[in-house]
Length: 300
Image (cartoon, rainbow, N blue to C red; front, top):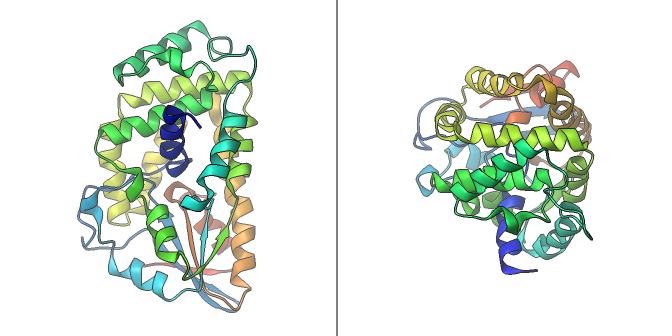
């Protein structure tokens, strides 16, 4: 893997699908609840944690309630296991599906307007769009989002998923709710038009990154579900033309993950389930869906 591609892959895979919520500026020991829920299943209790894919050193240690819940469990379940041991294999998969082959290229698959927007944004980030010609639009979009966050001081190596995967290494069983291949194929299912609009909207929103994060991170840090949901809905409703795409990214995946979580709750083992914080909230969020199916879900 070429060095520049390896760099982008590591950034990309750790921040995967970080569309909904980002970490808060408040200290991790601040008062109030957190994005942690206790779920009572037929065989006992398990826990659900809304994930933040990038953090700063100042956000550690995490709240005691989160650490205590993790310590009580037998299995860590994540959307995709991005442990170091899997990076090489996942990197090859991403390169095969996230990049154009042959004579195809980025400029051939974007409208003139979107391409020029991408060219300018990448230049602002100190990069040349020429180096991204083999990147598919969704991969460019996620790279831009990740780099904007890193520019603001957030570190992909300090993300919640990565933190707990390292803690679980050789100590707990690790399960996947989806897996990297499923998630890559999800992006691959976007139409050419959706890809164009997805990249364009990502670039437009990049100018609001600092402001949006400030709101979202505070909601996450103190477990403010209503504010988090409001922020997420505002972002989605800005682009009604991407409604079908967002349904794939959030609603459909939530339903599938809930079925997997229910299977965990029938097990004699206790699970510590981590998914993107945006999947937890809302009428079609994981918490609401579990409650509708008769489970007792309590925010801690």
